[in-house]
Amino acid sequence: MILVDSTGWIEYLAARPKADLYAPYIEGSETLVSSAIQVYEIYKVVRRDVSEERAIAAVSALRTTTIEPVADTLALEAADVALELGLPMANALIFATAARHDAEIVTGDSDFEGLPRVTLIR
Image (cartoon, rainbow, N blue to C red; front, side):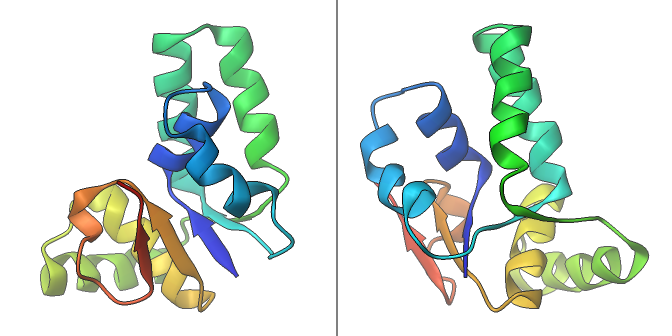
């Protein structure tokens, strides 16, 4: 299972320079999981940088993954992750979601550098 974080989805969906590096993960055969926080992040950035229409399409693409809701138990797991690893809230939720699903995180976000089960795209 793979969790492509928000930076990866934004690169891919907005056809940014690193889109081709994320494509094998997004288009591959492995099951994808996402955190509900990513719906917020991706919609916000794509709407701000491109258009509302593209942002809605981006969220539709994300809905092809298993989206883990932010329930109280996941929020508590993320808080523990944030305290232990020093991650900001959204990244802690993403990390906790990946851990819950035993998923590898594919990201360009340096906050995840050096953490287990993380593939960093440079």
